Length: 283
Image (cartoon, rainbow, N blue to C red; front, side, top):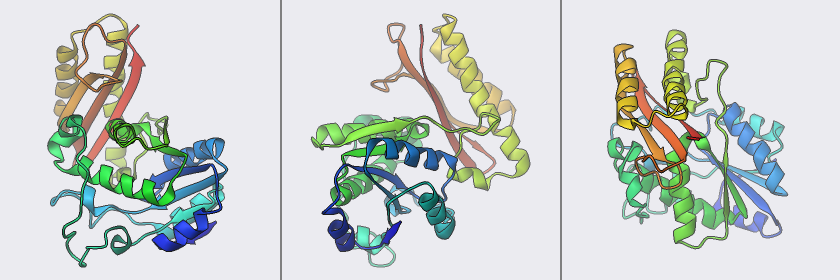
């Protein structure tokens, strides 16, 4: 596996490659990321991964400084999984105007309106940072296929819109969420949880599963279902950001006419913010 740190080396290396499948990550890899690499191998002859903790998508009070960085372990996992190239840029390499502390005059992409809802409501600017770094990475790697995890369902939606709006010749494939035996969605932030909290964290998925079951049984009182799930988690000590049933293809609030649905959630357990979702057919 090649380790590449600069834009010029990456471009020169990829000149001779065809059918590139790309998996962007922020590192601290878990089995969910490795499942995305396996999916990429099914869709491309050359699998490229990136590890870059993108400062542009972190708010001023978020965990950029403490975000776990496990580079050597990550590279070993990627190599063992069959990755061909890993791109490891510095912040300066990705953002030329970075002065060591600030991203001065960095051009950003305006994401679609849905980026101000759900996670975007409590993390203003987050999806602009995501869209900007993904566009930069797409311009550098120029893949035919890019793989993202469904756990970040809203992020996948924003990236698909990015590809559509900018007419990018890239197929976006969403890999299924990989879960612990308890149902907890695998996440780099799970490492912040204590053993007791990790057990409690499975409650989030359990609440979403109950909503899915209720809807499939014909209960379309979505607001009542959302409020009941939020109350359950709040009583268990969670700080709920949102639980919302949406139309999967638009992310607009679900109606009785929608069949392809997704229930999305974000909530804090202690100081750790967790997200999860389940996409499903109502009938």
